Image 1: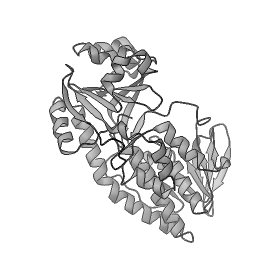
Image 2: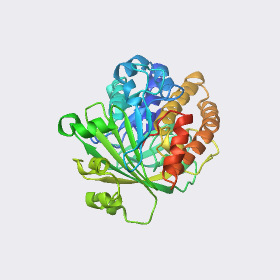
Image 3: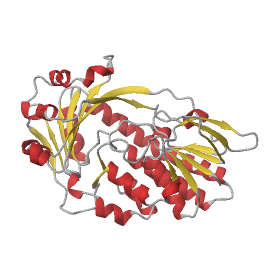
Image 4: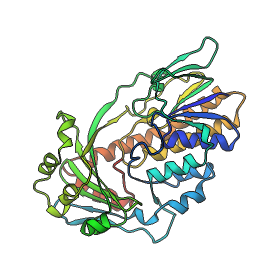
Length: 373
């Protein structure tokens, strides 16, 4: 099998690692110039039944436990006056729940487990065309070309590979604005204490101001807003953002004031729940390319599990990869459907007029935190 993985995110790298453990060669084409070309987002809570399971199948469970932060599970939910609504503290040192790990650390852990030549950087896939016999001819930005027998799209929300299988229209469900505060313990000890070792959620009417502690001693701040028609450049101005939270306690909006970086907004988009496609020989999808959901804590976990499950199917049936792909897809469709429905409900709840009351009920019944990235 000549396997190409388009996309070197967490799902694609997990797939490559599990294939490598089974002695199956693959090449990962990644559009970024290097592993350090850009920020990799914030901290992730890895779930035992998905992300942690995938790492176990990748033989990296021990490495994960050495890098993860169980204390990062702590989360606090406040209202706009600063009143505490929920404060969840995990059992100290316990890995039985959903310990946090910085996305960059997790990605490095996966990259370091692969041969150096397995990931080809600065290769953004722009087209894939079927060969006359079987397999695919690939064209990358800049004119680079390659070919493969099996093409796996791990290329995210705007997947090029997806167009070979399904015609999907994305929906804009929210806007997320990201900021960062560096060296928070030294420079802003009051904000470090406010956020604590994990996640902080300040929940208002149709808007959330959140922050999470990263392992490198910084804070990642996220502002979640309902989808509207305002130009996205509106959210690049710190003063405009502060005006949106004008009646909030200044101790909370200090998270915006103290940010070192310019605000970085992005649209939060989703695929229709229940998206499926007719299986096609030699091609499939994992992660956001297959099931783009709101960023409420499941995306990375499910992408990694996709990668591990697909790799295991291919390893178990190397003489009939198309049957392996069909089996993976059927299992993935069944697994993802309820998770996508739940994620949509949580996203709508978080940005509703009654979000504070709804979230308190949600966390009282289920003490696990969503993510904002």
